[in-house]
Structure formats: C-alpha cells, structure tokens
Amino acid sequence: MIAAAALFLLAVQEPVQPPQASDIKPSPWREMPGTPDEQEREARSPEWAYKSASCVVGNSGDKVATALSKDYRSAEYQRMFATILQNNGGCFGSRGRAPRLSLVLTGALAERVLARDPAPLNARLARAAGSPAPEAQSEGDAAAICTVRSIPDDVAAWLKTAPGSAESAAAAKPVEMVFGRCTRDAAKTKFAGQRLRALVALAALRSVNPASN
Image (cartoon, rainbow, N blue to C red):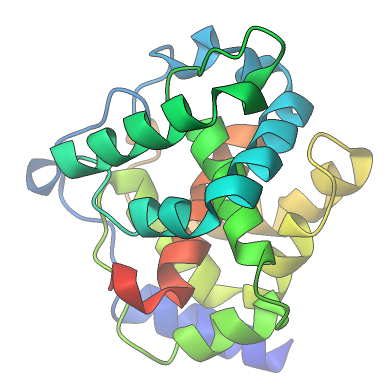
C-alpha cells in the first residue's frame, strides 16, 4: 500500500497531467457518449466483445498489438483496424460481419493482448511507471494513464476479473476513485463501467508496450 501511495503521488504531481482541451481534438467514439459506442451490441454485452476479442487476438495478435500502439486519431490506425476486423469477420458471430470499431471492443482487444504476456501485469505496470509516460491522445486517455501509473496493483486486479461480474464491479471502485482524482475536467471525461475499463486497459497496454511511447 505504501508503494502504491507513492506511485499515486508521483503520477499526480509529475509527468501525467490531463492536457488542456485545446491540445487534443475529441474523438467521436472515445470522448463523446452516444457515437457509436452505445449503438454497438458490445456496449450492452461485454461478454460478446471479449469473446470476439479473444478470437481476433488469437488469429492476429501481433497485428492487433501494433495497431493499438498507434495514435487512435490517425488514418493509419483506422486503416489497420479496418483490415484486421475484415480479415476476422468470423469472430463476430454467425453473420461473419465485422462491427464498427468502438471503445468497448478495442478495450477488450487490449486486455487480450496484455494477457499474452505471462508476467504479472501489476509488476509490468509498476516498472513502466518508472519510465516516461506515453503521450496522451485524449482527455480521458490522460486520466487513464495517470491511473495505471498510480495504482498498478488495483488496475491489474480489476482487469483480471470477468467483465460485467459482481467481482469486477467491486474491483473497479478504487480505480474509479483514482481516475476521478486524475481527471482535470470531469465534465469532459465521463466514463464508467465497461467504457472506463476499456479506457484503462488501453492505457495499460500503451504503458507497458515500448512501441507506444
């Protein structure tokens, strides 16, 4: 607990500060509720998203890891995922039609990529907290990076739980609290439940993946 508190103070006081609104253009799928996350089936069914993500990462894990290391606002990111989802259409149900990319689905993909490394996630996050933080790509991303660098044990414990379970809801509480403290403008970073878990998973992956720094 002492080490976790020290990491929290370090992360809040030093390198990871949420950027000013003028610094980052908001993403329609990450920062603004209703487009298109709430329109996608995985927003209502995290089990579907995680099952699909397991299939995609099982088939194209290296490509997914590379794509997730890119700036999500870039055309390159969009092109890479368009190809990945199209080539793995069979992972998304009997119709074999890939869904639109969404925060919940990309978060599930990030969790599956993180799970490919057998080393404990909390230890990997703690080591990463001693290195420069990845560049924040959004207001929410900045708060999530601050969170994963502050409380690696709690983040790892949450991502280890089954999505949508009572255990997951309990494990989310300390992460939600620190995320709130890491947020500069709460009105612009309204995340909860699976959307917050996805945002934290993406920040965790970018923190431990040198390619994303």
